Length: 301
Image (cartoon, rainbow, N blue to C red; front, side, top):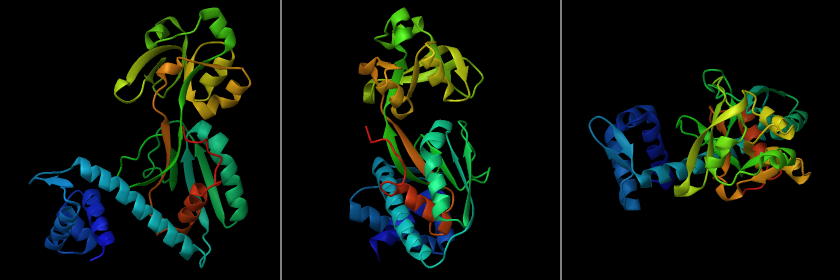
């Protein structure tokens, strides 16, 4: 019995929601699946799942093991798919979705190079700030600025980026600099959301000291890039990823404020609905996207 077999069985138990469902999916007897899980837990010296007659729950150790196992299995599948792809040239349509600023600034140049290198693959790149239904809307790959929580999807970490609060020098000269979150009640906030309301939720502080502040905006948009333009026009403050405003900061068009209250970095993931072992074009896209120099990523912060 290979350790990797036990790993795959455990991941399938979580994905299918139980031992019996995993056994049916894998074509194994439930007793075999139960015994393999018990053997894995004995080898690790800890429980991974707490099972009752009505539900199963991951332990803390189980969550750690699931995250690491998923990454190992995805990396193995991608490696094997890249090897197979050297024999059979992939082709067809690839549908990709990404948030507006990330897609325009970071992903679009990569996609242009990708289709030049692989003329048999066509790419439709949808840039939207809303949270798309990846499966329901038929996307192959999605870029999201949030951890992957759906265990039926495979996610790979792309980058981390600091979140900074910025305003123009002109605005700060006229209205002063905020120093703590409570000061923002006296300032003009520029927000992006999909609710149709002039409100936003901004995060401040790190770890146990994190605070979520609901701010009332003087301007709001469903387009996440507009608050940057408004900030450049001196209309208020906005909270953005560092790479979205870095050029403006370096040129002195914007300044950071409340640096001591900077929140945890935001993490970007590339996720896909079909295993790279089952799709040559997805394997090729993901392999080139994730390789060093594959995409112009901001350095981890």
